[in-house]
Amino acid sequence: MLNDSPARDFFGRLFKPLGEALGNAGVHPNTVTVVGTLGTILAAFLLVGRGYLFAGCMVITFFVFLDLLDGAMARSTGKVSKFGAVLDATGDRLSDAALFGAIAYWYGIEVHDGWLLAAALSCLVLGQATSYVKARAEGVGIACNVGIAERAERLIIALVGLGLQGLGVPYVLDGALWLLTAISAYTVWQRLRHVYHVSAAELSEHAS
Image 1 (cartoon, rainbow, N blue to C red):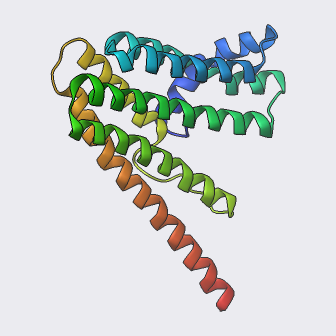
Image 2 (image 1 turned 135 degrees about the vertical axis):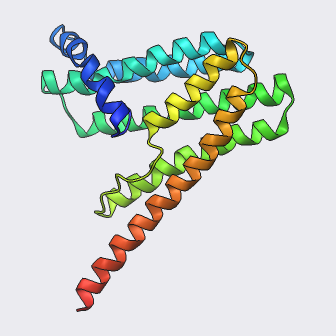
């Protein structure tokens, strides 16, 4: 699911009734997670990677919204589980990698632009690092809900750029990738700084 953010909260409330209805109909939330992940991966490589940018944007957006339903379904059916949370986070990482990997492939193979290939790969790597720092911090007991570029914001920027580029607006995806590279790198730094300060404060308390 999209990470905690104003965008995630808004769309989560918007789709909550549908999620509850599907849960009450007997659809398992893990099924929705798997379908959303596989749909995003297939759309990324079959559409975006082949240059069908607008179509790819629309299909991926659908599956991103579908991914918002699993949490509401799990809560409405009482099927909230640790496995579901891990499955959901794994699906998010695979979906993001597929999206930016497909964009990188398109720039490298179809457009032959090495700089934008590098920008897309930077978005992929930094997006994974952003999520990893948060997960690792929480693994050692430090809450890390900080940073200007949560997953929801990163996806919105990428998909808007992808869709507009697909409609023929020049350079918009290029700009989106460079913007994402910058704000993702800054977010990684913000989270590492936060963890450092919290860890240093804990050490000072133990030493005093």
